[in-house]
Length: 240
Picture 1 (cartoon, rainbow, N blue to C red):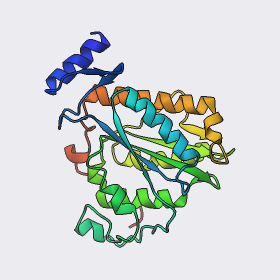
Picture 2 (cartoon, rainbow, N blue to C red):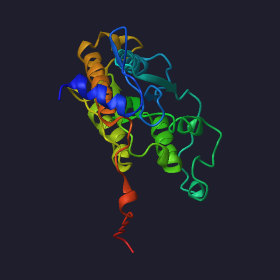
Picture 3 (cartoon, rainbow, N blue to C red):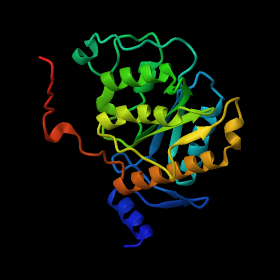
Picture 4 (cartoon, rainbow, N blue to C red):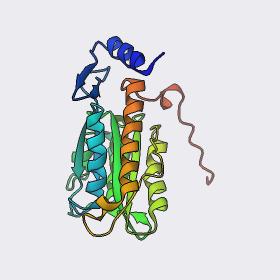
């Protein structure tokens, strides 16, 4: 079957028409009939730094494919780390600590068909604030994002990008989220704001990532990957 025929049949089965707008392939989420949407988290304390440049490149390419996106900046105010209080397990959906941006971000999970997290590299690791947000948001509201496609983007001056990239991907793999790659690891280089725009290969990698994300969303029609609902999680602790 030709690719265009496949897209057309998928859209028809979802009850939505395949439209053409400025040459873009526009397709709808089979669950709602709305255009699909990718939530992107800018994990840098700099709102318009190199992480923002990388995510904007992805957003522009997604738009060409007919997919909406929203970039949420985590800001530069303090963010709590997880206190392991377990209170969110008694009332899932939000972290009990509601004095930073974590719940505002996790509240957007349900409306998104996919997630991309971008972060600068600090001492060979992702920015600590974005890690705290992801850990708390996934633990308290993981059901809203589980099984949805995800990707990580590491932005680096020189070294530590691959280690940060791996760290950002770890939570996705625990949440049954298909991880979307590119032509290279999802890395963009730059130090001072604006330098990332000079990384031609890095920006091309971002566009390839967007293309791959669009392809996966098209192929699945917004349906989540199967999760643990088919089998109870057999937690085995080795220290008793």
